[in-house]
Image (cartoon, rainbow, N blue to C red; front, side):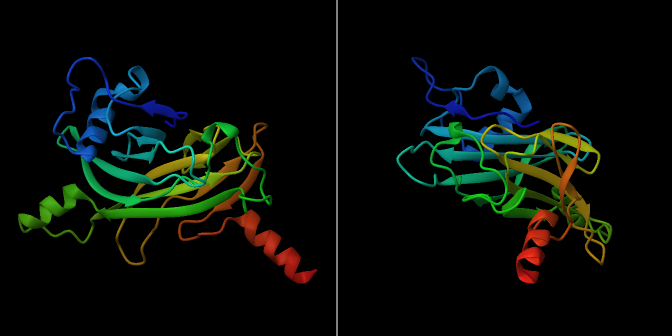
Length: 229
C-alpha cells in the first residue's frame, strides 16, 4: 500500500496523543491504528509523509517521511522499517534518506531525462536480521534459517504505473518516490530482496531490478547502447 504525499502536523487544540513518544513509535502507531488514511495530521515538528508500504504476508512495513521544507531542492528525510512481532509493529531499522524532489506535487520525470536515470532508480536501503529470530537466538535456538528484514527506496519514472514485487502489486504515487519492505533468508548465498518489475498502464513490463542489482535493466540496456555507439 503506497499513499500520496500527506501533511503531518500538530493536532490542536488538545495535547497531541503522541506527546513524549519517539518518532519511531509514532510510525508504529500509524501502522497499528491505520491513522494515516483517516487522520493525516498527527505529529510535530512538521513532516510530509512521502510513502508507506506494508507486506502483510511477510509481516514487514516501511514508512518514509521528509521534513516539510519546500525551499530546499532536496528535503531531508527518514525511512523507518518495522516487523510485525507478537501481534504488533516494532521498529527494527532505519536510515536517513532525502527526498530528491523540491516539490513532490510536481509529478515524475520520464526515464532517461534529468533527475531520472532508469525506470527505477535505487536511492538507498536499510535492514536488519529479523527481530523474531534475534529473540530466538537469545533463548539459545539455532538461527541458521533466520531472515533478513530490509527495505529499498526507489524513485520511479513517469512511464511506470505500478511495481510488481514478487507477486505483490504496488501502485506508484504521483511523485514517484516509493519504499518497499521485504524479508528474505540469510542463508548462503544471500537470497536478497524479491525481484522488482516496472509495469506500464497497459501491463507491459518496462524494466526489471534483480535481487542484488542497483541498476535496473533499462539503465543497463541504455549504457550498453551508448557504449556501442
